[in-house]
Length: 203
Image (cartoon, rainbow, N blue to C red; front, top):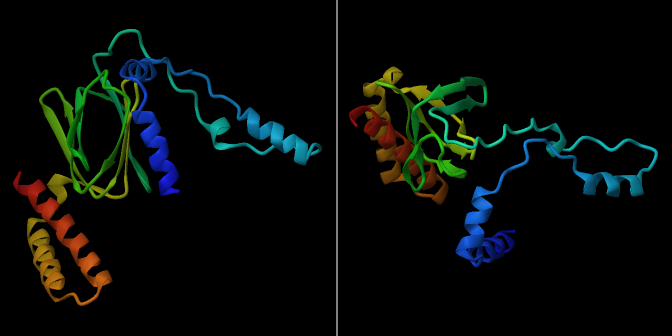
């Protein structure tokens, strides 16, 4: 699977720069499409049974990309158990991507970014709301909509500094005494998360 993915990425990298720009700026259809290939294949196998719905048929149509860059960025921020922010217009968000802090403004190029433990900040004028996120993904669409999905998140102002320091000390001790690869990996994750928490409080 990884080999196939690498070949696909390599083939995309070989596309001429002008072609890549054309793909990046191409208009994405606003209407949801039916998976016609699947439907035709289903009819051949079970002609008397209606084809089941596929994910592409259940997706809501994407709003068209505006001709001009909007003045606001629309943000959706969701966790597995609740929606933290829904269709909120803001000036900017900064997400803790694995490649570094990434600022997203209206008109940002379409991007998918993996998140690492760190601070997600939402900027509305002079107001900045900060959340600590454990991991997840940020999906930035060409129509100035950003969908942020996190496994866990908590407002930074609700974090207890004493518990963070204790957790960092505990996991650092566990890392030093770990004897198996599993123990080392678990302790390292704890150290990384608590170090990021500590940086969020002191940064």
